[in-house]
Image (cartoon, rainbow, N blue to C red; front, side, top):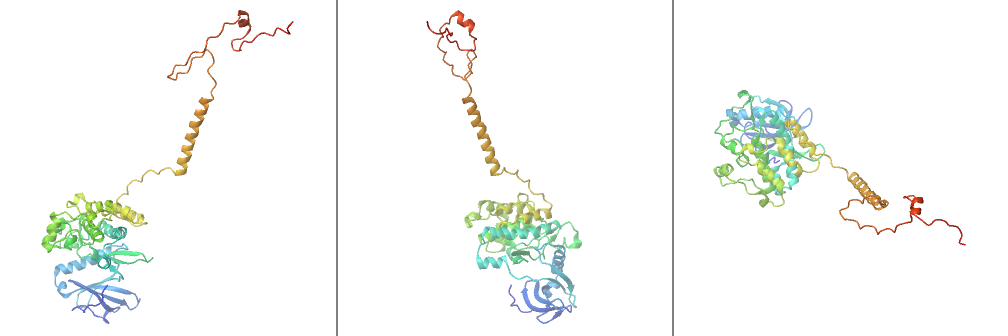
Amino acid sequence: MSERHDVPAGVPGPGELIAGKYEVESILGVGGMGAVVAARHHGLGHSVAIKFLLPDALANAEGLARFLREARALVRLRSEHVVRVMDVDTLPGGAPYVVMERLHGQDLAQALAARGPLPPAEAVGYVLQACAAVAEAHALGIVHRDLKPANLFVTAGPDGAPLIKVLDFGISKVVDLGAGDGAGLTASSALMGTPAFMSPEQIRSARDVDGRTDIWAFGAVLYQLLGGAPPFAGDNLVAVCAAILAAEAPALGRVRPEVPPGLERVVSRCLEKDPARRYPTVAHLARALLPFAPPGCAALVARIERTAGVAPPPAAPPAAPARRRWLAGLALGGVALGAAAFWGLRPATPAGSPAPATGVRAAAPPPRAPASPLLEARVPASVPARPPDLGPAR
């Protein structure tokens, strides 16, 4: 993050002490409504980031409400994928500030500018981490409304692996909590959000949105991470909004052929104009993204589903192990061979018994010469007849 900024009016500069404990070291960033400084806690020695409102925004009721709304939202969220808030206070002149953890790294907009489109698995892994933060926000009735690559910050986790932090809940909408918590502060005609990542319903009325507007934004973010540009473009704000409302995004597979067709379908569903045709929750989106995610993301998706109160899909019945299938086949083969041997070695049918029904008529045995009545009487029917022993010849 760049630290080369002039000190705005009304914002403490390097060397100044805030609340008797935070010494300002540098200016991290200046936006249209606020500024963020890097500071060090005198007693604990750790580095923090402190966000201030600029004087012009402080004089604006809507700007002050947005600042306080973000502070309230961040305090309520416990996800590791949201910036941690340590303190909220006011300067002697009454200007509020928020003390947060200081992040080191870059946001995804900066990563795209430096590297170009990201590998599909990497992009999906980042969005899944952001889904964990947004799932918690939705569970608390908070709709972000400004998800974009610049608000997804990549830092290092405790194990050194890339860790996404979702930034800027300043225009978040708190639903069903009453006007006292800022739900009715945004005029319906105001354009709240970043146009290229706004859903059609958000363009029409920023107040009349729910969590599915964040699902649209995730689709637009994925499209840009994979394709290098937002799905809808135009020469000006009006053209961008018109494209979002009426045009279809260029097929992602044509923009980036190496994107798996299944992943392209997931992105397309997020970008459905009708909210009812999108994924109903962030948890459903996370489950759909899992086949395209890096290894080890199944636990993260299961956690998102628990946070959102969504039951995971039923598990498929386990397949028989290969060894068990092999033994079963061997046993069946043995039975077949045994049966064949049994029928092949079976003694001939006794005389006088009916021939087995085989479908082929057996030939009749040759006629037998009549025997002497005396011999027939002395020889049992079951013993072959032979000449009697008449003694030595005389």
